[in-house]
Length: 105
Image (cartoon, rainbow, N blue to C red; front, side, top):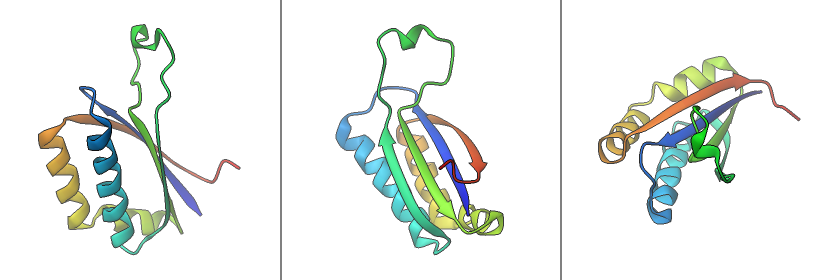
């Protein structure tokens, strides 16, 4: 089992409804590939003063579980996923950091 954990950071704050839509679109696109076993997404919980820290601060965390690296690569090659990413990037630019790892617990 491989976990793909994404730290998503939008350049500008998003209304809650827009963030919910983004997370739903990403979740659906990955699940529709047939390679993802589960998806979990959570909003970042801000701490006062964190905006002064020179780091990538998350808007949300998204984690996908896949069987192996091959399944992850095939999932990310899906054209529908690229369509969702490009659509959202054109409307609301964002950055993503990620890590592929074994389950933490």
